[in-house]
Length: 240
Image (cartoon, rainbow, N blue to C red; front, side):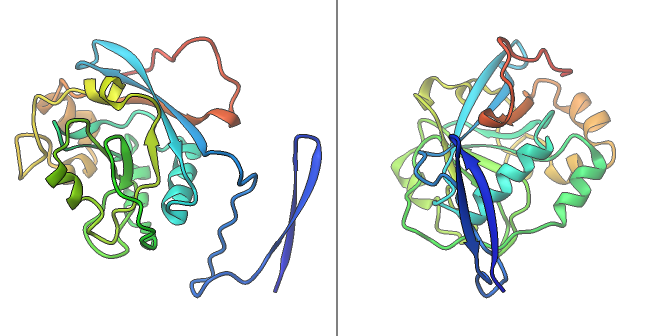
């Protein structure tokens, strides 16, 4: 069965035929595909919530169809608003993606997506990918490759089938907000003294566990797709 969708871009009407899709019944279509990417902006705290900063992420749908689509859907839902940076390993990676709302994170934890095909795109500092723990295990947690990563560690990213870059930080990653996210606790449990992600998923993860055990962690205030919202002049003060 073939369906037809239409949309308006720059005052012109476009029509796209949608076929039956791949073997999983999935169809990926990037409208206005000549654009460089889709810009997502995140307002976040840095330096242990000393101040607010801004992070621009360019999502590249062609790099990882499932990963990019899933990330954009989560941003549109406001899933990342209020989430904690629960893993920060200097010169390696920063990780986030466990929702502040208990029901949202519990439901999303069960909603896995299939791995994307390897297209030969090599990881670089500032690149983003979903984290996972096995084939077809990606849900909501995302990691960013930190500035200062060694060449040896950089080559390890992407060896797992679920690690596929879907976007990157715009601008100089060395001077970006991600480099100022609090990292004093080190890696997450059991690799370091940081939070145990399983305890964050518990019902009191954000109400008791994080504020009492890891009060210095930084948070995302909100993320949004720039072209889909009316931008104001300043950042939200948030409720961190």
